Amino acid sequence: MTVPGSKDFRWRLADDDGGQAALFAEEELIHRHVGIGAYRGLEFLHVRAKQIISTVPEASRVPFRHTINAYRGCSHACTYCFARPTHEYLGLGIGEDFERTLVVKINAVERVRAELRSARWNGDVIAMGTNTDPYQRAEGKYHLTRGIIDALAEVGNPFSILTKSTLILRDLDRLVAAAGRAEVRCNFSIGTLDARVWKATEPGTPHPRQRVEAVRRLNESGIPTGVLIAPIIPGLSDSAEQLEEVTAACLEAGAVSVTPVTLHLRPGVKEHFLADLRGKDPTLAAALTRRYRGAYLPKAEQAEIVAPVQRTVVRLRPQAPPTRQWHPALGPRDIPAPSPQPSATTPPEQLSFGS
Image 1 (tube, rainbow, N blue to C red):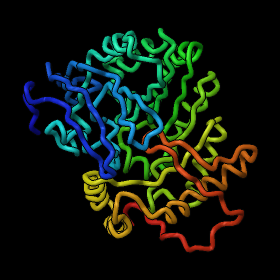
Image 2: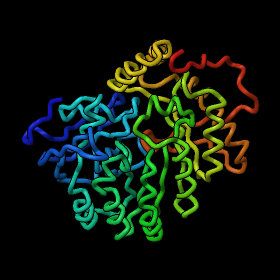
Image 3: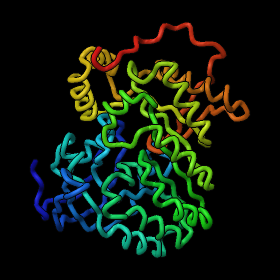
């Protein structure tokens, strides 16, 4: 691994494969810290951010205009993570570097307070978790997300959080207090309850059933919390039984919304994900290589994949069947109405690791 020097360590303008710009404020490396104890194996690059609230370009397709990301890189180590290429902009790798060399914006809380006080700030909703998880392992050491929540609550600024981590429950009292002053919304990403799939694709995350329980606790505490069933991986976590199981569990836990999202593989992520998969299940890797000519599957295939989720929602919560939902990172998603009976189309063969 090559870590850039402090003079070279800067965010840059990056474009994704859809032509959507993502802006990152300049930050300067001031210290490297090697993790010990519970954080052994991780390296933390301390930076001072010149700006922490990022404004998303108007031309983007996302349903929010402002974001906060206190960390860069993610120890969750999800093999399909769309944020992996952002490490390349720092001269780091999208593989182990992304998972183990983590950027920590140590002045994030003080910058949030300063920017919220600015006369130019008008109190818009701020989304957290749009790049890497605000409750990844580093948060247990640095408490930046906790401090940001407090800062937002102090001025009654609305915000949302997307996470895969049950560490969010540590701050349940703070979230409840914030919700008493402004709108607060949370979402969990829970792609499957299948333990084999979870261990193979999200090795650094809490067990999905623990996440379901966190959804229950947040909703019972008055924090509206939904679930993204994401990503649904074709041939691995897309069987009707798997999708019905996770959907039913999330609805039973009180999820205020359930949004299915199929796997998308942008350049860089695609190569990393398929290379990792090839070492575990070469047959499945070959099948997905053939199917993913671009970053997304054709819309008709996506509709077929998500249909079991929609049918389960209609069956268990018929009073409010979702037909159009927001994905916090991808924007509005048109979800076709579910068929009353299973589709007659033959689904792709369900594969498994080691087959």
